[in-house]
Image (tube, rainbow, N blue to C red; front, side, top):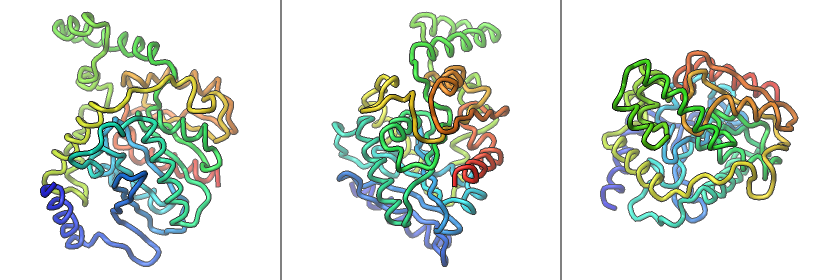
Length: 327
């Protein structure tokens, strides 16, 4: 507990010394927000607080994007109020002694809805633009299916596919081929034993992000980075993975089908994305079948699963286009 208090104090001093503050009609601040009884952290950034809200639901569970967002936020801040949220149990929203019974997917969906209500009230707006990245896209589909009135548009980034078994089979086939080409007999035996494409191998062979990119090094260049952050991130991810209830059947959300959505849909897909639950082939299939006011797949030819840092300029330009189409 003392360690977390000291970390918070050090972070506050660091940010004030480095001049990270708000100016007239602009904002660049970390906030503590109590959501459904749990203290959580958001980062709010914009050059103009009259801009529409863009909420980023990170992946994982437990994989914060907050301290990587500076790579893809410069243009976005001119057009949006960009909000990065560490979901309960993640990084800056991880606390020792957290209630392990309240780290389910449905709980985080409820948290997200409460956060959206908080943000729309705070900034005097009716709706938000929503990004769901990987695990966050499983949350995102549930939110837009059940509460469409709160959203201008939804952007699924590395969208979780609606059919887990088929997505695993597609990823397995790709990985098996890669391992054969590399003559990696040890890894081949490993995946063949369980008929499963393990994420560490997917990452090793470039199916998670380009191997020239070091995600931890990016974190260290954030103006919000502090000593001990990566340890905190790791602790939160281990906690979230251990206690998170696994994905529900994506065919149906709480109350409504994912096949009829009353919100414009956009899917950002990396051509090299081979994350286990996120086969792009199935996202294309879903986009073709779902009924929505507007729907589109946008391809990132130099990316795998992390196009926000693999192709940050294109990532921002496409989001700004979506803003113009839906406001």
